Image: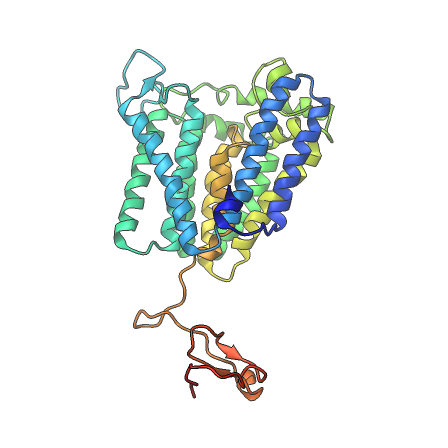
Length: 392
């Protein structure tokens, strides 16, 4: 559909190739999955997410396309939030005593509470991205802010701690990047990967007191073990150790494991599903997708990439978000954020036009004002008759 809509052939870059390679490797891992039916269902989710990532990157080549997809993304999130607000499905017959009483959770019928919250949190992050890239009008800016407020209220209703922390750390990063761009960029590029790798591999034991404090910071949701994650992570790590290179197959930890639950962590989920090979491919896709914005000359692109990366980290650490099309659409948009930068303007508000260099003028090239010609014409082209007037 992306190819048909755009009417152009695919132009695959490193992130696209790595996403496609991840999808192919998922299919290969089906060969040793113990429960083929369950593995196929999970493999479909992986493939759909990777395909969505490639499709969005293919379609979005201009600023207008970026904001069109971004606004569609926000519209979907807002519709979900309004459905949650107007018809909340509680997990208890009791009502909340206060807004911050997270023991009572509300969700959308037939949808996991956490998945709903993670999607709305991703919408808040994308709203911040759109604000950074500068909407064309004040009305658009106000609508984005209003949408973010609705999404935040929806996250509060779900009572999902990971999503709330994601919004808070994303907002903190956004504020930090306004006063210290380089420091914020360094934190995102260096600290986030270390956290994503070190915590599930055992560093959570060093931070056990801090994590338990965080667990008790949400009224009504304190469990003393991060809702079982302190027991799940070592089990998932030992399961991955049984087949470190190839993994045990997509979704097999849940389908055939003794605990019957997933790893609730990005690295451990990928390790069990796809092995070290899949981890490298998936990590490579994330790295190359965000490398462009982080390395771009404009600090806006770096801030955009940082907001998404930092805000998704709590979700990747504690939830199942590895096959979410919502996450992959947001990631794809951020990966092409440079196309959405505003063109440079003069003090009068007019868009600036590149001027020919001195070398070009010495070489006998000149500028034409004809819309059908390029800005510069070579010596062979200048003898062609045309209606455009030559500029001095």
